[in-house]
Length: 352
Ligand code: ATP
Ligand code: MG
Image (cartoon, rainbow, N blue to C red; front, top):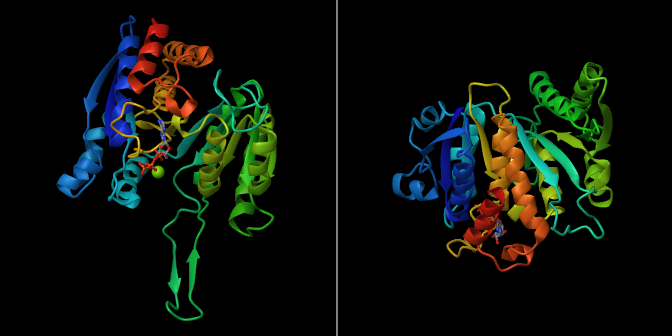
């Protein structure tokens, strides 16, 4: 099968780890029956500096015919974050209905957790974040600017449709895993309208997935438990803001930002989902061949899974974990001395 992949290397180390991804995909495509057709898109902050926009007006339409989008990272000193967010990442997520943000949190063999005495057997869960609505809405405003009564109001928009689709995804994911446990983040003991509504959507859906154990956590205690009892968790689902926070906390306990992958998924076929490492363009380490390519390579594994190339995904992940498990070749952020290219060479050697 031939998969059409749109590549957006972006800026800084995003563009440096993209070749690691491509080399892995090219190695895998030597196998019979697996092929990729790559198209490069220069959308980046550098593009913005030259054209005043992050991508051309028909950028979304150019991306649409692809089976997946693989993104490095966008960001550049002097270009504010909202430019890359509103000019590229949000339009892609919205236009392609990528309502799932998925982040696996698993401590790879050979890596050290920031949590004392915790090993790979303790940290292995998935964070599912609602990606389209919730707390990050446009609804709200300011009143009485400049006066002592000044205030701002920000609406948290939880729709039935939006909750049902993210919860369906999370339940199905939990059902497919050995432990079949879904923890959901809420705050219905303090937030009066939106969070009880969210709880009701979970309760209404649970009977459709009788095999799944559903556990309710208020987001504050859930965050604490991710530190004290990461082994309790299997699949975690949260609204946009809560999911955002938990999906940064999780990877911080599992080797840090240089190893954390993510996916923005629309489970329906016909529109591309987008796969990107959690880290940004990291201008402080760009151009030195020291960026850790693990996050990007693991992101490729997620993309292969999404494309139903499960054998290729498993083999790439095994190769990656064989290298980390051996612990001889590691990048600087993990205490080693290897560069981006050298680490990638080792993974490719392992992949055979
Ligand atoms: P951006 O503005 O694009 O988000 P950033 O400066 O916020 O970029 P991040 O990539 O979010 O940078 O990461 C913060 C820091 O973590 C970086 O400055 C860098 O030192 C480190 N870091 C991030 N990714 C990696 C990586 N892949 N390998 C090694 N170190 C990394
Ligand atoms: Mg950043």
